[in-house]
Image (cartoon, rainbow over all chains, first blue to last red; front, side, top):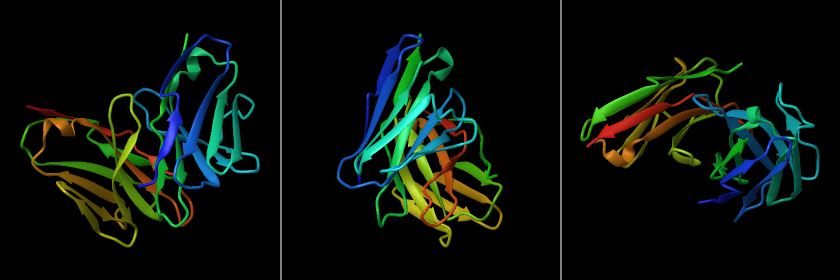
Length: 115
Length: 113
């Protein structure tokens, strides 16, 4: 099956710093990737759609200047949480669909803790 | 706006029991429905994917059904094992070519040895 790799799996950072999370499709190309986050005891919520070679589209209520998305190649999308605050602590996970497949494949997720 | 609800929120059963997890969605215009397993602090493992034209899918001890018109799906787990303990997520896909899923909050399953 298709593999999506996400790195790091967990990160702890100080308030005010920035954190970059990578999402890679290992054995297929993905022109589109999706970023979700999950707060404790809540459902996974779509944050943004990452588009290779163009700007990401953000869901309502997600600050595009805070959550910077770059999709510079067909196998890599990055999410940078800028000036992180404790309320940004969450589980972030990416997914990528493979052309010809009816499903999107998920990374392992990143547990971000801002202290 | 699509909303996905999973009942119960948590379930504890003794090993060997058969069990059913429920998922309901408000907008029946879905393309597919997917069941995932999530272990603590980990990513998602896809268990079963049902296309809107299908009624059920089976994989090993797992059977998922879909009643699109009533907006419901069930995940049946036969002969539960302690290793089945995890959170089970239901997610619906809105349309062909769209992979943006709407998730439920999940059912946390504990199988007691």
